[in-house]
Image (cartoon, rainbow, N blue to C red; front, side, top):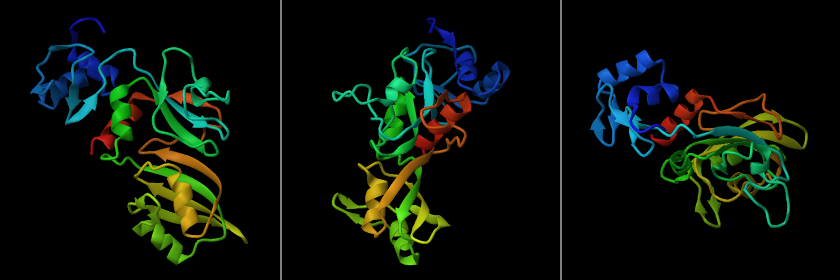
Length: 239
C-alpha cells in the first residue's frame, strides 16, 4: 500500500460500496482508525487497524482469499512429509496462502485459504464460534433421541460439545443424510458426534463456513472470495 492511502479508498476496495458510499460512512462516524473516529481524507497504512461499525476491515492491498472445495484424500496443509497432495497445491503458488482451520484427510468440502492473518485468527479462535455446516451420509437413520442429543450436546473424550443444529435431510432403508451445524472446531468433531449417537459417518462434506457457501464449486475447484463474502466472514467472526 502506498504510504498514507486515504481511508475511503481502503473501504471501497474492501467491498463497502463506491468511493462516495465510503465517504458517507466516514462522515457518519461509523469508521474507526486505530481506535479513534476516522476523518474524511485521513490516510492509513497497511498496519493501521480500520473498522466499520466495530468490524475489522482489511487494509493491505495484496491480501487474497480463496474458497476451495477440498477433495477427500487431500491434506489440509502447505506441505506433507508423506508426499500426499495438499490443499495449498490446488491454488496459485503466489502469493503464499494458508488454510483457515482444517478438514481431515477423508472429509471433503469448503475451506478458506488466505494470507490475511487477522481473519485467520478470528475464524479459528474458539471464542468466536463461527458456524460450520456439514452434510453427512451415516449408517442407519437417526431418530428423535439421537437428534436431540446432537442438539443439546454430546459427551466426547475431550468434553461435552456445545449445542448443535441437526436434521435428517434424506432417509433410505439403512442409511440417511444428516445436516449438522457446529460452532466448535475440535478434531474430527462432526464424525465423533455422529458416531457417539450411534450413526457412524460413511461420507462427510462441509457445505458452509459461516455465511459462505457455493453449491456449484466441485471437488478440487476454487474461486476468489468476493469482497462482500470477506466482509461477511469478518462480521460473523466479530459477533
